[in-house]
Image 1 (cartoon, rainbow, N blue to C red):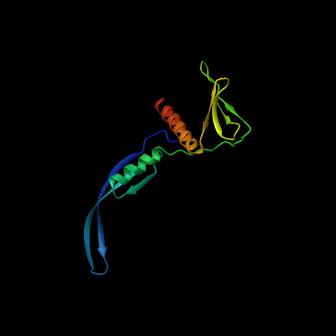
Image 2 (tube, rainbow, N blue to C red):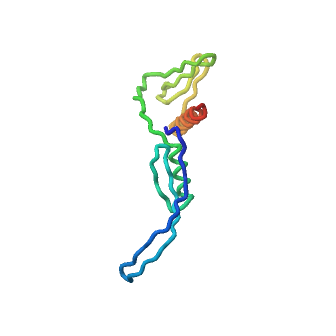
Image 3 (cartoon, helix red, strand yellow):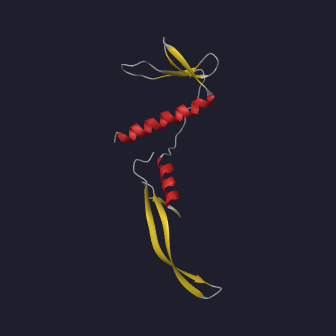
Amino acid sequence: MSTGRWRVTGLHGAHEFFDWETGESRTEVCTRWGVTSPEGYGSEFSTHVEALAYADRQARTVTLVLPPVNPDQSIQGDYEGSFPLRVRRNWYGETALSIPGECMFAITPEEREKLALYLLAEHYHHERNQK
């Protein structure tokens, strides 16, 4: 994830155009919007709305390498002073969150991706605000 900020700037300039059919030249003032990544890469857009939407989407985009999934394996966190939350498959093959000896919550397939994306977003939001 990029640690810097995406920047949206107005790109103004006059451009000379030559019409080969009429032999006339004209000068037009062009306003475009540039988006620059934290690494210095840029893209151009014709409207400010498009540039902002692109910058917003890119600022929230991360590339991940997913770990392999083994349905017979459970994942247990190491949490000091709190309940140990486990992620595993329940008896019906559904993804489940459980607190050993306490309770188990099955997660529907429709909710699984939403929950995973929300937890990732929360992780990166917290990580970015700690710097």
